[in-house]
Image 1 (spheres, helix red, strand yellow):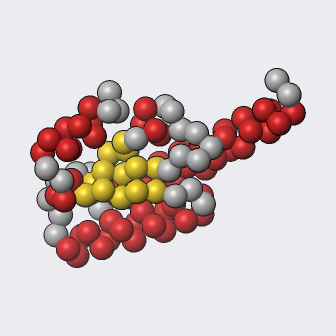
Image 2 (cartoon, one colour):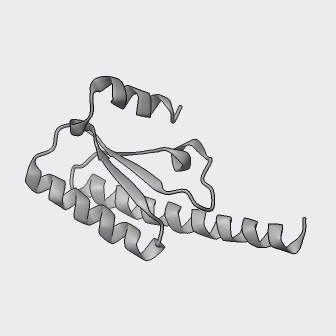
Length: 106
């Protein structure tokens, strides 16, 4: 492995660690607030790369006031990591799309 490859690996690993730590804090805070969030996408599949984002799926129906709480919780939790994210609400999707997203993490 050359120096550039080694640097790329270190950066990817550091980014993965920052993302994972932020996600763990967010999931813990969500649970304390009675909010169910599932991580989907590359982080859930173990395929997180240097330019990956974190995909959050907020489960179940959620009222507008709680939705705002979730948005703030995730934004505040991800900001220090400097890793971009997508916040997806199950309520906004068809049942087939939800199943498709969940199937991708298995």
